[in-house]
Amino acid sequence: MADWRPIINRRSDGFPRIMGILNITPDSFHADSRVDSVEDALSRARQMVEEGAEWLDIGGESTRPGAASVDHDEEMSRVLPVIEAIRVALPDVGISIDTRRASVARVALGLGANLVNDVSALSDPGMLELITEAACPVCLMHMRGLPENMQSDPKYGDVVSEVRHSLEQSAQTLLDAGVGPEMIIADPGIGFGKLLEHNETLLAAGREIVPRQEMPLMWGVSRKRMFADLLGRTDSNERLAGSLGIAAMAPSKGVDIIRVHDVREHADLYAAMRAVN
Image 1 (spheres, rainbow, N blue to C red):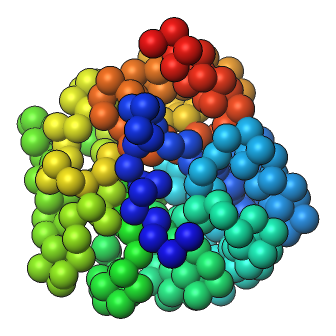
Image 2 (cartoon, helix red, strand yellow; image 1 turned 180 degrees about the vertical axis):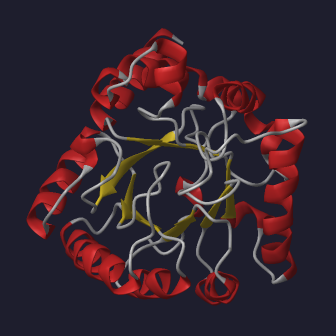
Image 3 (cartoon, rainbow, N blue to C red; image 1 turned 135 degrees about the vertical axis):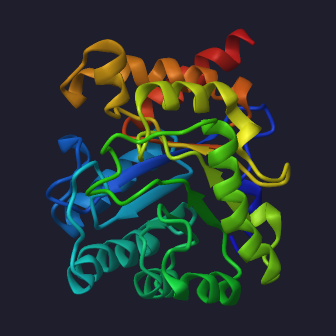
């Protein structure tokens, strides 16, 4: 597909697109999402697509709370062979490169990635130029601080308006450079520099955090620490039910893409909801 805009907007039936998570890391918070070889990644990718994923999000640096940054060359060596192999084997799936580095994103796009998922919302000065040149979709996520310190007592006055304003500033940079608003995906950054009360408020707000109506909305809530605070589930393996509960609200909140660890379960959830609706 040359034009990826149709699949960064929710389906015609109102349900979000499913993005499966592939972490090419040894330290991502949910151990079952980690893969340690190209063969393992490709097998997992095939399974996710068969289960209903329209996107695969591939990252080589953990951004969990307290995570240290990864060396540039190490990040490249983790993600690039996986992207290359998946693009050859699965030519029709959307590939998202989850990175804060423009240099990594540039090579990934050249190997067949279609979307840049930037959790730092253009903190790398080179990212603006890359997105403008590549004319590819980009996801801007709100994060206060850095992974190593973002959960150190985050405070907000009005979390919805502050997150929206921050995303609006980043998006405006792209808009001024000629990027269409329909190519800019907004992500409230659940768990990134936020306490449980902030996460709950942002999820309840839904599309209120999106700076422009034409911009798609993405949620990444799957198995996150908020379920330890909300439900007492300290082990990420115990957080699927909570994740599905939030995912069930996504259609009514106008979510276009939902980023998940468990593709089959989310696809089943939406199939059941679709049948009843």
